[in-house]
Amino acid sequence: MTANVDVTVVGGGPAGTAAALALAGGGRSVLLVHGPGGPPAVGEALPAAARMLLHDLGVAGTVPGDGHLPCYGNRSAWGSDVLGSVDSINDPYGPGWHLDRALFDRRLRAAAAAAGVDVREGTARPATRHGDGTWTLPLDRPHPPGVVRCRWVVDATGRRAAVATTHGARRLVGDRLVALHLTLGPAGTADGTTLVEATPDGWWYSALLPGRRLLVAFFTDADLPGADGSAFRRRLSATGPTALRAAAHPFPRDAAPSRAPAHTAHLDRVHGDGWTAAGDAAAAFDPLSSQGILTALYSGRAAGLAVHAHLDGNPRALAGYAANIADVTAAYRRNRAAYYALEQRWPDHPFWHRRHAERRQPSSGTLMAL
Image (cartoon, rainbow, N blue to C red):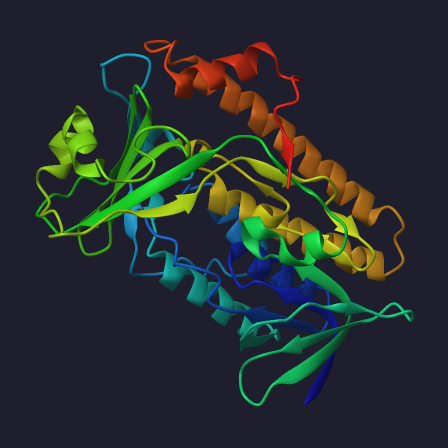
């Protein structure tokens, strides 16, 4: 079976679905291919400002929808032992959400299907670019296997940037941050805030999940003590407000934390011959920014609009998109450096020394090409 469409979007997370929605809104025929792509994301918060983006994408009536928890603010022990807070009552958009991430993604894809996008669960094998300017992508699933032929490919495959890196782009990695995370059992607590706590070798994040379970995550560098997860519970017990919060939730018996990449990275170019990258494939941010899904929706929509304009004959559309992503990435780096600089209690510990050194030498060549 062979399908012919204008654009194939590889990756069915927020960035890919936003790109597909933007393209379909412009009248393009779109195939959105989504596969397993690794363990499901959990415990993510969506800022209230996302309401505007969801409205622009035409899905605000159904997404996020029911099944998520409100996020009423953010608390942090950062730079001192004093716990500070930012309350959503001061946010003009109201409270955000603690997401059931799998449900959120499914609803986005359902909205894309309702908008005319051909949404398929499967795996796209390496794409081939032809001399006539088209692509063919073999699809491994669903059975029987098929092939899609298209004019353009949007790479929304996450940090691996599978399409872009196969076709000449380089992945530039800025640090070695990893996340070790574990979900604790349900409790009667109704604390609808996120909590961030700095410690000598990294920082902790916790937030309620639907069902009143608690996600607890430790962020550190991959080469530092604690990154293997063997002392996760002991390190948790040595924290302050995070340990107090976790004490109300049953600890899974014999459970080991899962590990996931959390480093800063971006491509050296976000578009090439027949392809455009969006979301984490284009630029992946430190979770400290709390902007992961918001940025994915934003960059996905921007990528979709740029590809639509390019196919319509606008010669500046893709360059404009690249400049936009570069501006977002530069602002993120400034904000990240400034926020890490607020924590000065352990300047000689490697985790903090590295981040303070980055601020003192912003062009010191810390990026590594992969």
